[in-house]
Length: 257
Image (cartoon, rainbow, N blue to C red; front, side):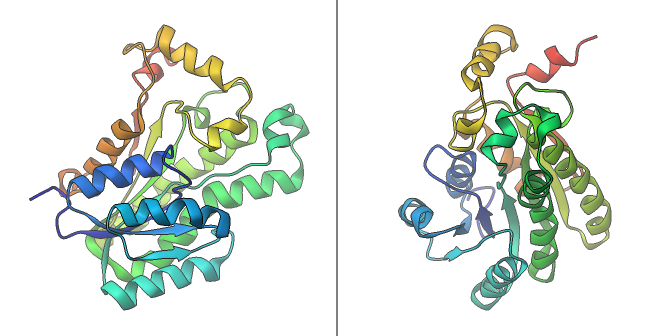
């Protein structure tokens, strides 16, 4: 019997086998969870479907998180197949490459709106659609980054989007607490992923972790996955509105003084 045996949920945001969401999915499967997965388009489906099927998933659905109707259709389908679910993992973020590369003051209005929509508002939309089928004691989990609290070079508009995401976590946690639903976030350190490839000088951020983090290394997808299991399982039944750092202790260093 694993910590997630008998629990079902959906994961948004697996892009390939380097995704943090994939590390979470693997750890959830190891603990007995049954999962559904989503993909954005045909190109990503070719990557996501084999991964999902390797974990025994038979529910693999298209979803553009910029479209409310797509999100609603995912949860409607889960309701038809499973009736109720126990967790939602929101591992979705996006900003235009030029808005990450250029100085923050040069962020376009459209680029700002896009980053906030995909990276922060989508959590609100997902939670709203999930509420009717989330069991009491259910859990919603998202992924943030230190750039929400500190200025991280080249993170730019994504830092603002993650700050909005973290505020959304707290407001959703306060609202859904009466229904017994928990909402939390994991703030992971820099990890080599497809999304990270769009951030300038990313290798230097990894080196900073090796040089200054208490663990003297970056964390792994699996380590983030283990923390996710805690938040999504009954072990964290009394925890909500939490922004939890899994970053090798780097937040300790940058927050000092």
